Length: 420
Image 1 (spheres, rainbow, N blue to C red):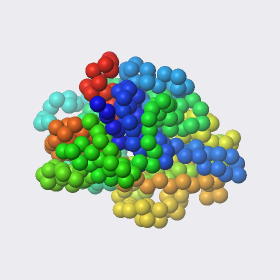
Image 2: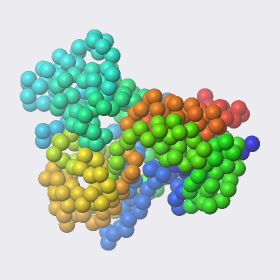
Image 3: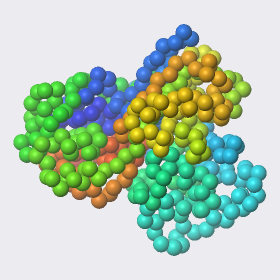
Image 4: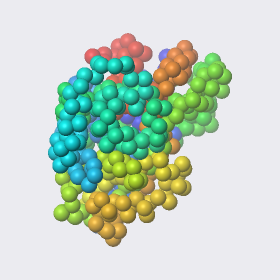
């Protein structure tokens, strides 16, 4: 019995590695998916970019670290900030709000954070969840507009509460937040060092897009060829998977069309680094200002120095889908984005930009739809199709959470696999 895997990203490769008897099919010419990395040359040297910040947060998962055995990793303590009203606050802001010079703001936040989250009714949507988690003052000043920008949705009440939201959103009991420490490849491979390591020894068919799936007949078409499968594990976006099933139930197809996600636009920049910048020791900065086109700015080379030439920095700018609906519109924003980066002091002037690499993502953050995804995934499992990972499960997750899901599934489909 042979298992086939669609997608050579972190999730698909982790599954194949743990399962031990799976064939991986990857549509592109490189492995890694959204965890891929790119080298761009300049007259100053080579810059390494990821697709935005991809940090490996280990959450008490020794079995995951076992999969990465032999991969040199650096352990890094997060240096992140929130840029609010022209002032930098340590992240998470619910632990540093008292640095504000406004005593009324400090008093209001302190009182609201002390109030019991058990009081009142259970939140029914993401807006209510954020207000219950942090109180009205922090919600109005930071969480509302930051999440609007990130999701590309002005009405946060239209967003369901996701599976991992309670992990990321903490009030007072974990003042350091959920991702204080993380790991990153200890050489110049970038985030792609992890999927490259996982792929060693695995049968991975590159340039092999899956274009059609027959669930009843257990066949698929990959790169124009018919392939027979016994079990199929997919990490492609869930709506795309359903739409590729030629004999799919019409009701399941209709549910897949209800799934929504934000689009993504990452502007990677290689810059001359200004030693006097207020962000010189910062890994990333959250920018809630609704007038700015980006919601987060980070520096790969502040985590791993080898990702930029001497005297330079490799950085990423995650831009809000509130301002674009397609790749063309996103690219047209670049001059304005650069102006805003200069205004906020992330770069000094346009001439400091040595290289530029824009990346457009059709899917970035998945908007939860528990009813639709559960029904779709139940239907798929009845046909021995398993959809996993951030986009396969249609939820917001980190790499270690996706790898944990892959290990669990490998244990279910291959009894010889031990996942705990």
